[in-house]
Image 1 (cartoon, chains in turn yellow, orange, red, brown):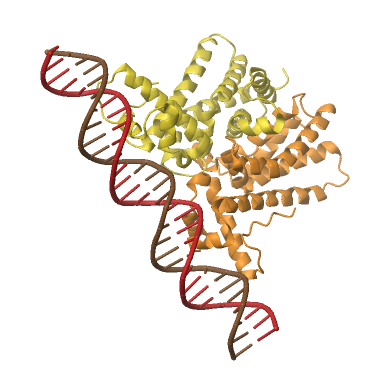
Image 2 (image 1 turned 180 degrees about the horizontal axis):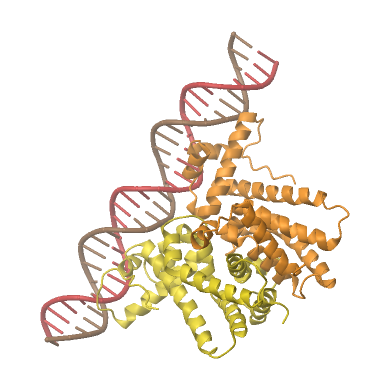
Length: 213
Length: 213
DNA sequence: GGAGAGCCTGTTCAATCGATCAGGCTTCTG
DNA sequence: CAGAAGCCTGATCGATTGAACAGGCTCTCC
């Protein structure tokens, strides 16, 4: 997926600048996802990236554009993970494929909680950032997920529940433990970054959706 | 549950002031939950409440204290709803009682999405506001929910999944559709404030947790 | 090897934030 | 019916924010 050109002026870039830009995007994704768009200041993003604050405005026209670059980068990671999983599923039957894709989705959300943190941030109220998220990234995923659930429901592989409800059950049940990882650590003592915990949670979500198989 | 005295100075209050204070707390809960602590400005909260900005500092020592008052008020609503439901469940068997409490929890989350919005806001990173949320409000609920799931699992009423995972599946699958209500409206065309949708979602969550009964 | 474009920093600005303060109006109380 | 206390507003403060600007260093290319 070709991510949009979020660089401010179009110019011939050098490798060192690309690396710096990536560090900024990663720092922005971390901070925006933890502290919200308003709570994440450009100075703290710059500090985490190890650069000065005006440099953010050299690489990105505005804070909004930096936010969009961070979102694009997170969804690119998601598509990379899902595509890689999909290539390993050629010829596999539909139900097994669906289970493994759900499993992959939960695993990805555990290792990249920033994505769902930012969705949760911005989709609670209408606004330009939710427009960007939904129109550009979420809707295609939603459509495909709905199709998947409807097909599975026709075959009786998942309970007869309207697909939009299954969508929000999946996107809620899967990532929440990892979105709220600091709370989870405090409440339960479990470490949501532990591979065994991630695997257990992905299995749990699959069992609830697809039954006890 | 006696909510803490979040009023700044202790003084003899008048009914008109209590009403104003309540309006401020409601406006604060709405705005903080939609826009995060940093994104919700005291001026906009005041505007929504129909008062001037300095009045917030008359009723509350600081923005933090106003935030705590908003959180307290939301959890008070939750406990009122759950307690009222519990009184109607005297003598009912454990499984039916559990189903109805889960159902009530989802219904409440649909009608008061601000609570989970604020939890999602603040529990993504450690900080004083997460301390307040967890220590004062979330932990007791977590403990009781864990006990409930462990008891149900011993009786085979829910799948044999470790209770913390079930907790985050429930608190994710139940409220997310309503936390992200604006997104849901846009994506699916469904209205998450519609009673039929709420009922369908609560039923769906119960069916997944407790089986097809 | 010199010129120019890319990359980055130090300084600074206007806007907006939470918070404070002085003062006026209203309501209770003795 | 005064006096006091509660309730609320207008004006304003220092701090912080995103953003802009000028200038210097470095790499590239002819």
